[in-house]
Image (spheres, helix red, strand yellow):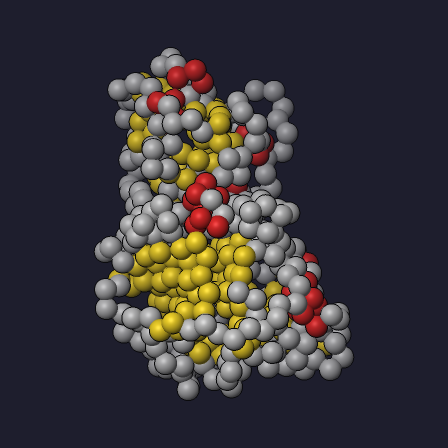
Length: 448
């Protein structure tokens, strides 16, 4: 193969995330509707999460039990580096220091911002994979008990979720945000294209900041429910202490955009930023200021996730390795040419033969496809019709996200196109490509 342009840059723990530049949102009275799983605000941290709600199945839980001063457990990883890398204007440096992120010994995770002027450190942690999602025909509930930080202008605590791939089409759900120690809360979704688009990026579609009385003096429960019980009319609802105050429906953004954003697994993230577009926009000033106090702490009692319909993850559930069959023929499989693990090695169709080159694993609820330790990848992050698909080091970029659709196609949200066999040929050795999604046999795949 001739020399290739560079692939999408690899990432470590960091994921590109929202350009959160929302301007000041006017506080509005809560329109509360008590749900069947309502809970009361926590006056103090619990020793453990409450029991699994009736009709739900627990799929994730961290009670943050551990010795005082210890770091996070194995379900999480640190996302470190300058806040400027996150595209939000925040000014802190995220660290893995226990000065910024540690267990308090009483069943809580403390994320603390330290500094003054323009020199601040803080913490951001996320689950080690996109580990929770709503099954088709079911629901996902993600909830946490959190005490918001005090400290003044510039503090920006967040409890949120992010899908794998390119932002914003990969989907983001902000379950709790407050800025400037206002003791308020906002729930927001991000999706579609940036800037603008149907999801109004980089603002997203959200509730705006609303009053959250007592949210700095005690623990309160912040909850998101992604409802896919009607897969043609899905929704996301936000609640404070069990009372719903905002929701967004699939019809507001369109089915294709919604599916790209939310019909797959997402990671859970907790962070405490300092400064940036959101707090600056709300106060009409530059934050933090000279009066901002060091040491404000976002304290988390527990994070939990539940699903209905047996606790399954979005279809298809993560299966073991096996062949991916093409719809162009009865014995045609997706194949890594010559079983090579070289970057840019062509991925092709070939007669099904059971070799290791055809033993694909579905990772992150169908979002990435692995064979021989490498990932199915769109060449050079291309988005045009006819861009070839190859093998490349797994790096979590949008080039490697392929989301199963109900018609059997595999959608690459970054390009908005589907994995395709050129001309619907059955000729072994034909390299696959991306092409406008059309539902033909050339784009139908049966996962292991």
